[in-house]
Amino acid sequence: MYEVETAYQLIANEMRMMEKLANETLSGVDPFVGEVVRYSIQFGGKRLRPVLLFLAGRAAGFSNGQHVQTATAIEFVHTASLIHDDILDGALIRRHCATVNVRWNVQIGVLAGDLLLTKALELMARNGELHGLHRLAEACRKTCEGELRQLGTVNRFDMTTEEYYEMIAGKTAPLLACSAELGAYYSGADNATAERFRIFGHKLGLAFQVVDDVLDMIGETGKAGKTLRTDLINRKPTLPLILYLKTVSSADRAETLNRICQNDFDEMAAQELITRFCESGSVALAKQEAERLINEAVDLLSGFNGNAQAITALTSIARFVVNRNN
Image (cartoon, rainbow, N blue to C red):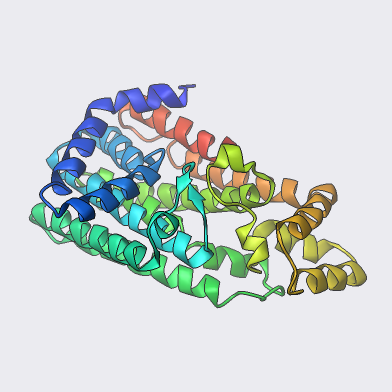
């Protein structure tokens, strides 16, 4: 199987073109504005969405200028969502750096995210067609709805696993699904093929979010490069917690919820509960759920008569998502 590094090498030229376009798009602005948005764009990390778009494009045929513009736009949208997420979560670090709201303030963070969203719209308009713009707008809408829905689930500790999946379907999944779908679409793929890649990206996104929930509990801040334990401290139901509450005795459940809802519940107290979750097997079960979703995503690629190297690379990226530690 391809190593992840090899998968990235396959689209290295496209990634360089995307970085060049991103820099060009952010040039010519006020020096302070430029400083803020360039600082923000480093939070993209692995650039998973552009990678997915370019590899789907290769798998379905080829890459072109529309791929580069769309990948850059999607990365801008993703970066904007990270800035806004950090504000909502009160996060202090992202990619081992101070978040925008800490480096500057909340007002600057909100406006920097908004600016990146408008830049994304400008780039999509350059493609000269509406389908891609509609799909990206739909992904943005679903993401916003998903985040709002999650805020509405704070203290909803009776949530079922089915409700949990409905909620996270509006978080990481929409942009990943959009990336994979548009990668195939701009290569001239038919509707059935584009839909296959959309579902692949959707399942990849669900798995990514489950792993994110797990890492927020058991990850190491030094490796993750961002503030952890925020979900539990902010009383957001995640899969490990849902699975734990589903399997323990009513007394243990009541005691756990009572602890979480206390005003002095902090990271140290959260860590004590996380130890219980790990010992109960609920964290391991959540990991298994992520692996199931990745297997379903990879199965969608089997038998697809496209570029073999790109398909192998997509499989490698999918496996990486479920086995990552940050």
